[in-house]
Length: 334
Ligand code: UDP
Ligand code: MG
Image (cartoon, rainbow, N blue to C red):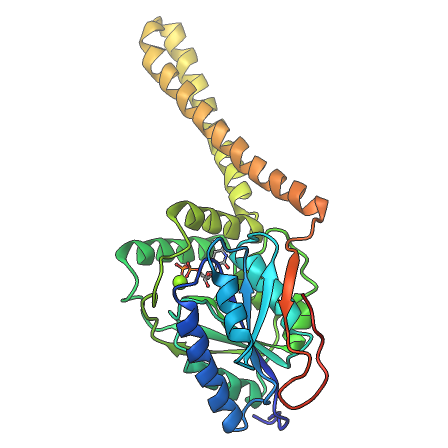
């Protein structure tokens, strides 16, 4: 607490939105309330805002953002030219916001995360923390399926040696300093939850109860969730490849034993009885080899993607007022 911060920071709340027309009006009104309360308490600067990132939605998300942009000084918009995916949309928003803000809080559009914790996060920042993780108290409001997959995921990640914060999603505060560090990570296979602990600045947690989605459906299907988990693991750890090497070693030892056994059987003259075990091992080894090839292929695919160094998102339009509330000149875009 010896490095308390005295200046009033400018806060940007970054919200990735993919087909969120149903929840967005409510999200905007709740976040506006939070922002005006914090401005009133002089905890954040009056230029603070929410940056709504439209991740190439197919519904009226961008129109909703434009509608609110005009009357509401707290609303800013960023429109991506195509669907870049949750992590990249969030990253685009963070990188944009860091030019305007001292601190950035990222939150999902669906109001599952308690917006009242934003105040606690800002307090923590003023106590001197650079990263504040929002952590869920429980998962009672999630479906059994979501809870089960999430727990399996965290368990696996931990075993694979990835250092991630338990029950923390993408609800967190990052200081400008943390954002500048984050901007150095130019990854195609982006998994922010895994990267941010690597930055290693002073961090803390605040906890809250996670609510149900306010409206609309989860944008993560089983397929998206599985690929998210798989990407998370393979972009943070090479342990799976080591497991394969281990499996290969064990298989080789087993095959030596089997070899000895067959030789003895041959000498003793009961060769035909070996047929079953032979067929079984051919299939087993074939399967293991295919899985191994697939997994190694996954990593090679990642190397391929990274080596192209393609931009991960494109900005199509920006809604940023020319003048901030308090008269300082702002960039306009779009
Ligand atoms: N999202 C996005 N791009 C996508 C998928 C999702 O920007 O391709 C956003 C979505 O609008 C939401 C957040 O990412 O704000 C998290 O999505 P969702 O709530 O559907 O995920 P869940 O809470 O079910 O894991
Ligand atoms: Mg959600």
